[in-house]
Length: 536
Image (tube, rainbow, N blue to C red; front, side, top):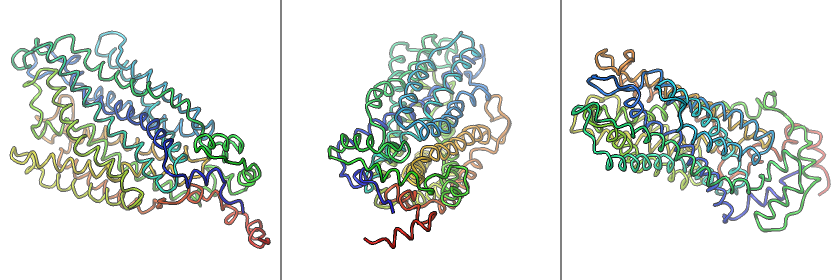
């Protein structure tokens, strides 16, 4: 029996050292950028509505029409879904490292381009914005499977969960950074142009220079990505890809000798034996894959899909919920720049108090409690808090209870992040074979983004009031915020049930989890018997 390769075993038992942290930072900065780019759009959509869709003499400032709003917030998610599938597949075909730089270049170029416009008509500006945000999403999509796979293949067994979760946790800082940048930019413009509210003077409440605000916020997303490009290119290919997929034992040993700073021998015979084993040749669409990993893939895709419906509908529509409970004044009671400032302040507070702590608690506990327990617990509490918000919803809308509403709302976020939002990212990077790992992670992540699209678009319409006079301009009547929250509670409960299909991967080596070492036991019984009866 082939057993574990020496180079992979060395990675599994390595003590936590400097290269682990550099890998977390290099992969994590990609995620920081991803979160910044995906969530900063929700800070500026109201401003876009005011600048491009305000009708002269209207009682309220303009808002984006439903179709435009859906396109602007959702197009990056569609791009991400496509990118996850494409780059996930490419990462297994060409290698993690080769594809890794490509995704970053795409993110930098499209971040800058999404702040530029062809023409100044509303149609021209929105079309340009949507075009570049689709391709920005495409690059972001590639970052998901590649970052997770690279980190899991570099990590040791003992703290692998914490390392992958730490890469993902950089998202929290990305959301925070988006809020801070919007606060700084809007504050600076507010100091320079002291303008009245829309009610006092509709025309004077919007200065042409405010058109730069949203562009600066979007373009700043290019900075962290550009800074990490050099380090990404210097990272060697992972040993698991080089040895088990590219079948180059010499290169794998040489790369990891440098990284681990120990002498490692190239086990060419062992690599040949492992890679030529019948059990290590089945493809994604084979019966063998369905038998071994079919249920796992169903588990990772459905849980991520269900989680993201709830997570993205909450995240993208924070500003609407804040307005509904009176945290943000009515649009006509503010000028354009104050509105950006107040939305950014609310989002930054939520990120600071619940999003960031939730992510880092996962990092702390994932290798103690295990992935399964954290995911089950997270879905359970999300269900509880959603119902606690939804059922007495009228109680929460009263002025005296608003702080209570925000606390409960923050707790659902906290348990999403100290729960399935992190674990759904970690597990698919651990349980599949090396030659299909990036692809399977991409498929799972794409299912998540499909859920995000359902959440983002579905909630936009569902949360509209049942009373036609209270709906936003251009929208049909919906089921109201209360019923939407009840629906999200049910979705979280179903997520809890599907978690039962996901295996626990704590403390095991990647090859043990995917069965790449001992495939001969299952597949080639003759070989296994002769190996077991051979003299020791």
